[in-house]
Every structure is written in C-alpha cells, then in structure tokens.
Figure 1 (cartoon, rainbow, N blue to C red):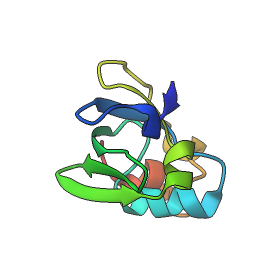
Figure 2: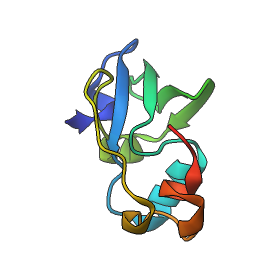
Figure 3: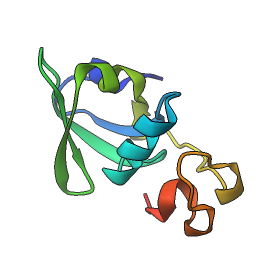
Length: 101
C-alpha cells in the first residue's frame, strides 16, 4: 500500500484508505473516492494528481493525494460494514455515503 500519488500514469489502483482528516474523507467520498473503488491514475506530476473515478476525471491536490493510500487494482480489499464506517454521517446509506464501488 502506498500513496496514490506514487503510482505512474496509466496505473489502475484500488483505494485502500482515505487518511485521517474527517472533513477530507467526506470530500473524497463526495467525489466517488471510497475504499474499494477502482481508480485510473491519469497524471501525477508537479501539480494536482488527476484521476479517473467511475468514469469521471477528478483532481486531488498534492497534499490530499499523498494521504490517499492505494493498492494495485488486482489486490482485493474487504469493504467496511456500514456500522464501521465513520467517514460520513449517513450510516443508513452504507459505507461512505452508500456509493457502490
């Protein structure tokens, strides 16, 4: 597991962890970046880290992209159960707001 920023462009990775800041985790969940989600790294040069998440291109600043931990896409990850997810407030919606991977 390593920061998503360290994967080269073209890599397919799976989100493993979102970091420790609750506000940042909620922001990332709103962008579709939830644990278990497959993501394509588009670029990660000196500027923002550009990603393709669920068919949509998003950009993460350098700081945020160093806190998002990922593994190669072929590495399976267990998804959190709703009662274990502390990312967002809506527990009834499922892990991280109920956005499926």
